Amino acid sequence: MTSPSFSSALPEHSDLSSFRVGVHRTRYLGDILLLVPLLKKLISGGCPRENLFVVVNEGTEFPLKQLGIPFFAFRRDGLLHKLLSMRELGKFLQKRTFELWIDLTVSDRSRFATRQVHSPQKIGAASEKDRRSGDPYDIFVPFDYNHGPGHVSAFWMTLPGRAGLKLPEGPPDFQVPPDPSAKEEVRRYLSLRSLENRPLLVLHPGGRHWFKRWPPDRFSRLAKWWIQEKGGGAILAGTPDETSLLQSVASGLPSGASAQFFQQSVPLLHALLAQAALFVGNDSGPLHLARSAGTPSIALFGSTSPEVWGPIPGERGVVFYHPPACSPCDHTGCSMGEENCLRQVSVEEVLEAISRIPAPGEFSEGC
Image 1 (cartoon, rainbow, N blue to C red):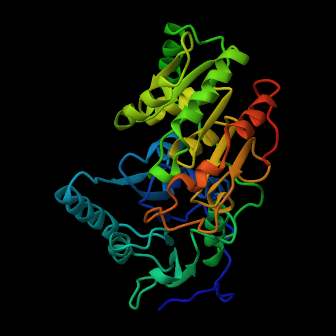
Image 2: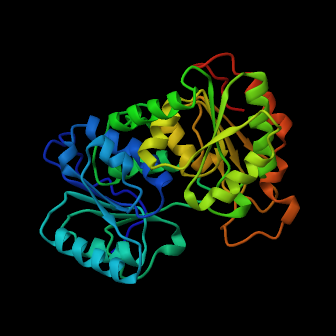
């Protein structure tokens, strides 16, 4: 039986030392980075790290490894591996008991996992349209992941309270410590390219959909300005699949100005970002990775609402978001063409924001 709201009859739990909490969020790297504040609240509230358990997709587990939180990573490379992962997780869950289970995915796969869980309280949190008759949740909390209201991390932090868990108050903490071996490898990378003593600008021109990407030539202009006006080094970050996109940005640089490609693992990118003076990128995993590294950022939003998925007030960064009437959207496609949302953000306004950066470690508040 599901309930859309908190029942005041639930007892309040202030001692979490013996509490076991499971969370299911099989989405993208950015989602897991945005989950960090909830996990840290549980830990600071007294829940031992070893009593936490998070189900994620393979390739998104970096923050959990760095925080020392147990996890299960689904393999996604083919139907057979997906089915084997589901069976393996099901067997694991059937042997364990959780005082609280939170499903933040609410999909066929997460419902299957939730049904295997032994827990007196199971919470499902998703869009109202995702709710189904016979769902395995004791409490269902609707949330619009496009429009909110409010930030997704703030919403997730309210969910333990629905089961009576009393968590510490205070602002969310997104920080994730860098991997020591990755820090050393990045140090060597920068030294070999004579970049270790220059202010670094890391640009990420990629994005899950074409309409979530700022035009490559605009990233080129940022890199040119940074090299010529700041005397800094420009690094283009992306996956091996995004090589042509990075080459497109690099091709827009004038003779004598060059940008380095960085197509390494998540731990290495995180360590690089921790050394950067500034990150500029689209709404995607690397943007949230920069936040977790404490790097000042300029975030470019278009089809997604920054009020739900972006930096929160007080963080070091600037958000640019000039939405047309159709934003935020469901990302099923875009008919705006040359008038799409990210093209509404000009190079001039981004450069003006960059020019206000007085020195590494200082940054203007978001606009």
